[in-house]
Length: 139
Image 1 (cartoon, rainbow, N blue to C red):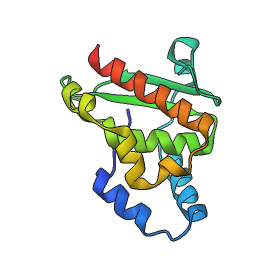
Image 2 (image 1 turned 30 degrees about the horizontal axis):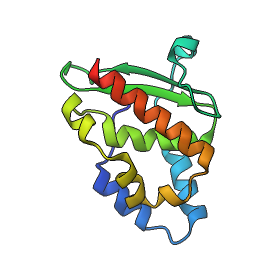
Image 3 (image 1 turned 30 degrees about the vertical axis):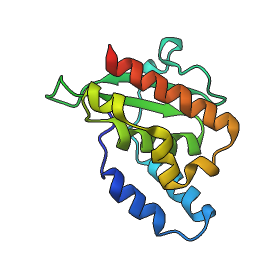
Image 4 (image 1 turned 180 degrees about the vertical axis):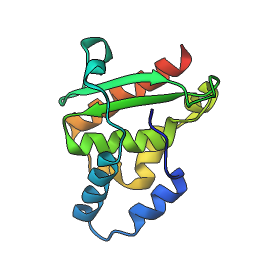
């Protein structure tokens, strides 16, 4: 399961440290490299996120010892998408279903400046991942 190493406010501060988008993309890719490895046996059709141009797999769960909160494991074959998954981990992992329902992903990505720097196809994939997370959290 993805356990965020930082709060969203810390993530915003980290993004602000970089002056240009090349550096921010490198940071995003580095965040993705730090994700826990998703075992190959979980990379199934049932766990695949539809609507993403790249391959994305997502498995719901709970933080260890806390069944009332949501967590997920995920992986992608695209480096930037893995970084986006890490950002989603900061936004959603360890939260209750009610907290997850209240997350405004568009506003969060706007705060990071990612809303203007993600291609339309990646944006569609991001929406698909968020919808999957929110539906998992409701279940």
